[in-house]
Amino acid sequence: MSGDGVYGFATPFATLMPFNGWADQFLTTPNDGLRDFFITAAKSWAGINWFVRYDRFSSDHGGYDYGSEWGVSAAKKVNKDLTVLAKYAAYDGDANSTNVARNLTLSRDLSKFWLQADFQF
Image (cartoon, rainbow, N blue to C red; front, side, top):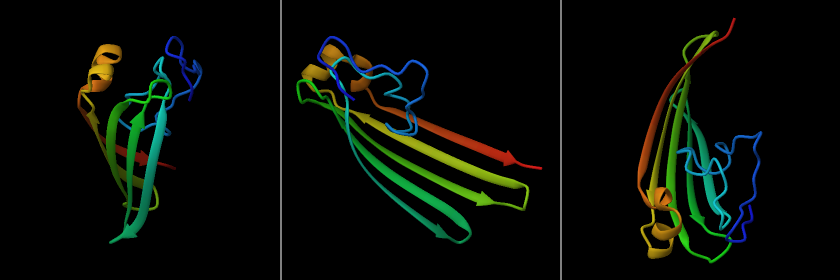
């Protein structure tokens, strides 16, 4: 998602959460753009569906680091109608001088935890 230092690519009618980490740090593209290197792994074990992802974020314009994020989720189908999901995201902001000056929020650490129950009938 590009940026030229003044404007970043904008998608006003979309959420970027599934694509650029789970901690919601990049719901809008920074003016310097966004490069997201990520790797994921998924595995079912002991009746639980596990998902792990790692993201490394940097600017498209200027080539500096924003930070990195680990995300982990576990989903368990309790019965035919109920599924329980726990999800955790830990964003580690990079406090380099450029990021602090241009994106103070992105230079700070942030953790989020979700607990969700899905009931279908």
